[in-house]
Image 1 (cartoon, one colour):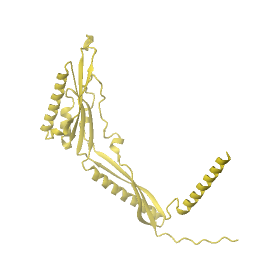
Image 2 (cartoon, rainbow, N blue to C red):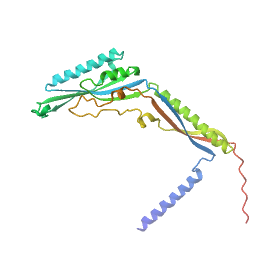
Image 3 (cartoon, rainbow, N blue to C red):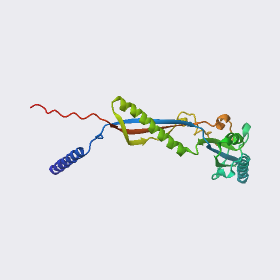
Image 4 (cartoon, rainbow, N blue to C red):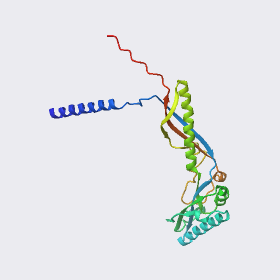
Length: 264
């Protein structure tokens, strides 16, 4: 027990010496006067590209017949895209999933259906010209075997837009800092640190852009019309806000007052 106490005292003494040395070598705050402000920049832009996601669902007692329905719908989708001057290769069809369904009650309370196969596949269409969106979404919405529609809008120049927002946010921070510096009788100096926060998509946060706009998928109900058609086809502006934390040096400081020695 005595040995353990001795070790603890030695460790505590070593830690206190390290802390004392560290506090003497570094200050917890910069040794120059500074001002810390947050600037921000906002923009609202119309998207120029989009993505349309949905499912193709087919039910049949013969799995080959169900697959033929899937293939027919894919051919119709690509034909519509070609008609709208869109590249049919921009429609990506993912892996087909097959399940077996049995024992379902027939409409009107009749005998249960025989064994049936349900085939599903996801389709993703990259719309490189958003002006074709209303015709494409309107042409596919409500068609048989199509379900689970989801829409996403974006900018092909998003990186450039982000860079411009950061620049404008720093300019806004400088304007705010100049007001503070002038009020304190100082002149604003150079930027010593700047940290941009994550860009905020206000359209999504405020529910103005529905990236998660998707029909609830329920087995046995592949063709439902409870989604607002106009809402799916509407192209809404993307509202972006970019905050930036900036630290500026303050210059033209008053001369430090000499310390007056205390009287003995």
